[in-house]
Length: 71
Image 1 (cartoon, rainbow, N blue to C red):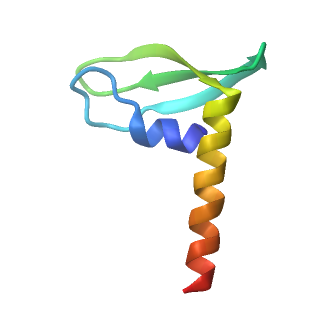
Image 2: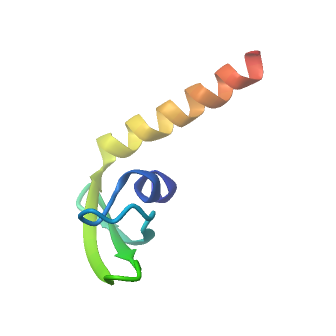
Image 3: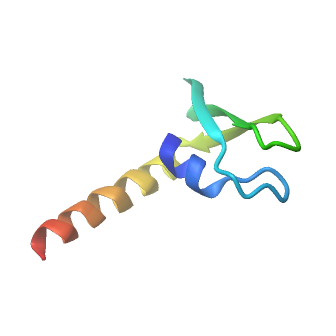
């Protein structure tokens, strides 16, 4: 999930991948803190990922790994 967020989340117009770290899991939500350290800005924000969203990401990752092994 952390790698996915780093690849997909962006701060405004910033094109750099942010750093993401997991803050914890509570009530069916994984909370991440993202940090953008562009030369023009430094900003932090949080992103919540539900358990069902995490399951979709994990399934896609596993399916891609299995498909790569078959070829």
